[in-house]
Length: 313
Length: 232
Image 1 (cartoon, rainbow over the protein chains, first blue to last red):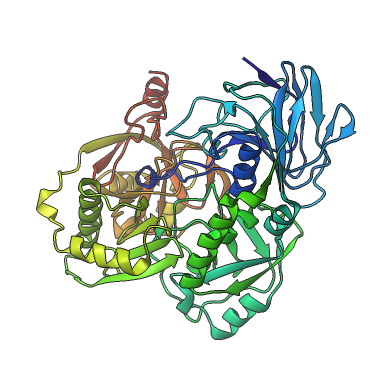
Image 2: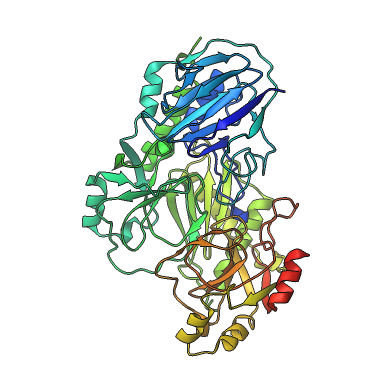
């Protein structure tokens, strides 16, 4: 069986697939890739099912060697990867020979880069998913971020290398991250009119405190029109919750499943993947759309992702 | 947890892929039972396209596949379920004991909580252990059960600044709630003790020690007993 050896892990590298749905009754959030579209496309480049497990790197990538070789693809943000010292293209399948090493550096664009390998990363699934949930130490590779000298197994490789690439226009469009479209949240009417105007006018700065649980924003606070007492309730992925001091937090893939802060808005499904590429000190602006628009945007996005033109052979 | 019945049901879009159903606007035992009843019915008769159910005190959040369902369609289907919620058909919750070592290093906020309410620490412990709590729902992190109702004489606001890390097994209180932290996580609840019981056991078939609707009592134990149970 082929393996991946971790020579250096990078800042926070985890095994992720598309997450585990349907365990809310246990308090278990879906987790999964922060930029699921990058993972899905990477998997398609290496002839995997879209849900296969890959490596998710955040901000600074690691160094990995492949003693038996592998077919892989890098998607998401450009971490300046090199293969035995030579620059390696993103968004394309690559045949790595036995003994070769890939070295990643700091990001040159957004927050996360994905390494997808033909056969997928083989880990024991937890509740049907290979995704790591760091906070609770569940799933993925030993329930944690990778460390130096870890050795991961690669799943069965059934096909031989084929050169495939994502159409450049597609990767550019998918990588935009300066704005997020939202629908109103369940407590939007708890907030001051003037605060809601500010919320949509402000360019919020992404805080260094952001992680897979939540993306914290810095900027003008959003204030409630009166002191209403919130009863803890289920919270959606991409909910923009407002703690008393007013700075928004976008609940993300490893989110708490319930919460007691009011939500002013919710990022639309078609833009959730963009949250995963927001990095500290980026600026982001919200714009409001209706639920009907949000639905058609997702349907369009899925049609685009499944169209033939997106993958070049 | 008033006995007064509030029959109003309210539907509210939470996002483009989720819908909240509210049973009244306050925490009541009746609202809790109707949440449980709807969850139960949705397990017996699943709606195609529903991906996740997340109960709260008086609400249920349904996450769904927006390529298969719209909010309006889902609301219409759910209205057909509401009339058929039969609380009498619900299994009575299991009785569960949570042995807890109160105070000291395990419960650093016990003294402060007691002082705020004009009690001695021993009285605060007695009060916390005197009530049978109900698991309203599990949320926050895997295995975290929201337990109510904490006696008013102990109800205490959250810490102004949450702790960056709360040890696993910590027993906390916040307002009229109490609960046990299953993992070392950040937390703003006031910590009054710790249990050696593992609240979330991923290696077992039944992973969560507590489930929605269970009845729970805390039993005070000594530090020696805590250590014995922890190593058992």
